[in-house]
Image (cartoon, rainbow, N blue to C red; front, side):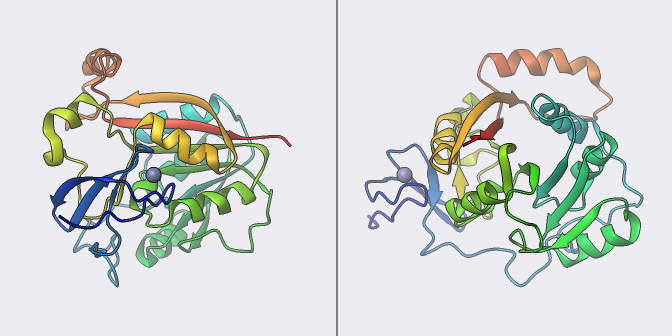
Length: 264
Ligand SMILES: [Zn+2]
């Protein structure tokens, strides 16, 4: 029996031991966060570029946003129709390109050198920043929207990043976070064999635990949405009603929450 590590969301030590999954020893805090013990976890991509062809297939530029990225921007547009949008951990930039196409002044922040250098070459219509954190060149209170699609589950210090995001957003600004949904029935059925229990996922959220963590950083919840992933061709649009039904029944294993920074 290992000693219970402190929770990265609330610092409590009274976590339940969920066991080992790959390089992650997972614990569940009373606050609801499921997390990997940072003392034993090793970043599988440290000193490597995740977008190197060794990890990811080479992309064919110019990129086209797919239905997945366009759907993400539809969520943004529920609360914000224009302005300066930063996609944090934006990868090769498909979500950023969808935001640009929707009229946002778009910045993609990404720490992969390859993703950013390829992006600058092929997509100069959006701004690229090679960094793990939002640099000082972005003034506090100057962003209207920040999005994190499949980022927060990777961050060993989520509170530090959320505090910075809060500073960089203007009052009333929008934060959209998408993560795997630990609360889904699919996860319950699959246990630690769930597809999103991965060596590089150090945090696992439910809608409640994500709302609690982000709320403590000064945001109020705007909306909760669930999505269902199937490994199918996107042109199989006839499956959309089935996916929506499964989400309504609690099988949505993607969680997307919109938060607003308070005006005061
Ligand atoms: Zn906790």
